[in-house]
Image (spheres, rainbow, N blue to C red):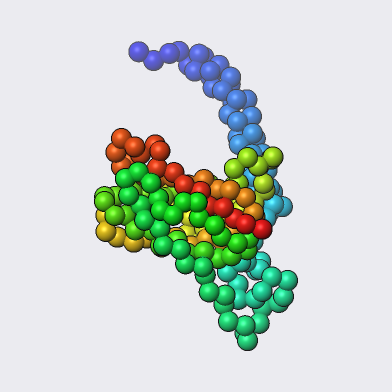
Length: 184
């Protein structure tokens, strides 16, 4: 059974202001978001991704100098780590401030995972940019039994950074933790 024509007309008149205010609000939000993206560098980029054309820690130049074709890239510090029930060895891991580090992590007994904080523990305030900048950031690097995973990062700020196993590995999983200490 259809409602009378006059009821449908009244309902459509009531909905008209709501629809137009909704479209104005939605359009305002779209315009605002586009303006913010244009005015703020880095919006929409992954955390830690440098603005286009910016000098990065992966550039071939030394800090404070322009890029030069004559300077070879600085070799990363390679640290071999084993993951096994329910610890990482070595831990803590000491690295220098500004160093590019490659962690070669091998799972000995079964599958494990690796997840590190990118901000130092006990920081007075949350820093604007991450202090550990990973080349290929992930929520959890899974390390299969007998396999080695290479995780590369740049240590940008002195401090202590906790890491843990992020792939359930048994009853002691929650205690499988370690530290990266970035020395000044």
